[in-house]
Length: 252
Length: 252
DNA sequence: ATCATAGTCGTCTGCCTGACGATAAACACT
DNA sequence: AGTGTTTATCGTCAGGCAGACGACTATGAT
Image (cartoon, rainbow over all chains, first blue to last red; front, side):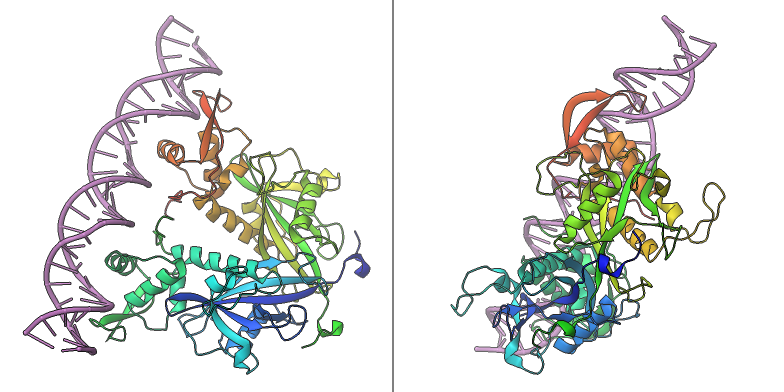
């Protein structure tokens, strides 16, 4: 088949972001309110068009910075620089997923420490951190008793896929540290696992496991008491990215 | 930002396929020879444009059927129907990845049992199964002493990502059975693991592990001697898709 | 002083894995 | 028929790791 510009249909390509964080013991995602049709007024994942000269990961990093102020953590950079972890998630291209035109969306997953209130073009009322459980329940009622509208487009599916990716990836990688501040305690890391998996973990076995895995945690020497109780050692993320043997998610 | 068709650049969207199989104890991928520029005469992954009314997975299944005659195995279908496993891999969108125009390629990964010789539009000389090791070595020499040209476009990267996905996914899922015929022996399954991982596994421990994992293998009652030696029990793939605990890849 | 809270260190038991011996059932020779 | 080769299958044993859980420590609150 020789090259013929008319031989392929034109597509719009966007990036959508699943930005996850842990707030108040719950796994939360960033949602923005749509200002125009379709799905006007409904919550959606942040995202936008890929520009003509942009790589997909660049577009995702740009959108992340615009929505949250976070710099994407370059995977090739040496240490945790308070940037967010960013990785490609999956691509969604159902012909009917956007009623206006043919849009292929390359979803990305970002993991960030707990942040100050989000901003969406400076308008705080149009962006919020919402528990993923709340965003994913269809036709139910939120904490405040108001009916919950499902996310716009196929964003509920995208969010569900992103949450599942995060849940499985913290098993066999050190990615859970991306939810923590640069220095953190074992207890804080345990609460990340508990929030993401939605389970309770034994603090003693968890402590043994993470401190015994080479390269996972590096003690900084300091201690903190910000959780109350006995002061805890502070750690940074070590160089290891793959955990072997992995963390084990308790049976269902 | 109101809807404005001129507000986004048009993209071409393609699907590329990493089709893997195990032949003669080696992990092999399907490669097709390019008939026109760019990269004319070079080997590439099979693929093609997504049509205007097609979903991404439909386009991938169509390309797979066109290149190999394989039907994609519908994940919602109940049993192994000799179709290939097909799943989305990742999306590649570097602005310069195709010198002609802006192309975003949604790569898919297909796993198939050993097949008769491939066909590419009926022309066998333009399609072949090649060991992935051979396709991925840059600037080396193949088995026949001829210099090896790297794959076209960014297809070496895509192939490497697909191989890595397959290698890690057979650890924690029953996906290795997708490389086998509908009925197979424990030894044949073991040779799949050995070819994909490029290691030797202990036959006794492997047998104990796979037969002891609930839902992985279902005995069919028959036996076969096609490998020589003592006749071996035949099995089908069981209903389990996730293996817990996983198969362990030996240390590097 | 006492209590509550959170962190850290140990112990014990059961399960899984890797290493490897032994036996079984076919085929290919001589 | 006997012998060797190949592959399959079962069994044993020691080491390591995970879950359950007891004990002690160091802080702040009352």
